[in-house]
Amino acid sequence: ELVGRRRRLLFMGEELSQGGQSTGLGAVQDAEKQVPTKGSGSSKSVTLSVEQAKQLQQDFIAAYSDPAFKEKLADLHERHGGTETNKFKSERQTLLLTVQTQVLPKYGFEGSPSGLMQMMKVFNEPP
Image (cartoon, helix red, strand yellow):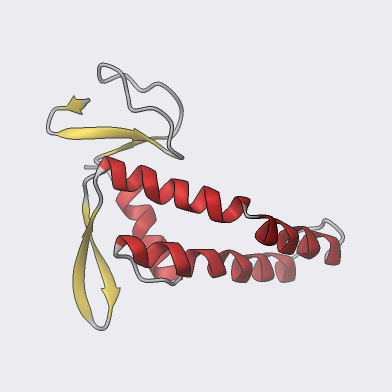
């Protein structure tokens, strides 16, 4: 539903707001933003519709739910004894990046930590 000229989207693919009121936590305003992304030295804007933003989230959920990914994450936790040391966090980020490099480019973002940050700006920057 339109809220002024903008839409609201609940993060992680929850329902759209009802009558301008958020139906849950993590409401993200202005899902059709344009945020400059860095890549090849040019300034490129990425625009996501509400549907594209929801699909991007679903793609991440599907990839992180994949049994092979879950097994790698469980192995990582086991190797580090369940403690979140700096080494564990670094290795976890490297593992997460294997998914991010596949999903982000489908939506016009760079498949890198920089692209992830740009995607987060699209979802979180105030209008």
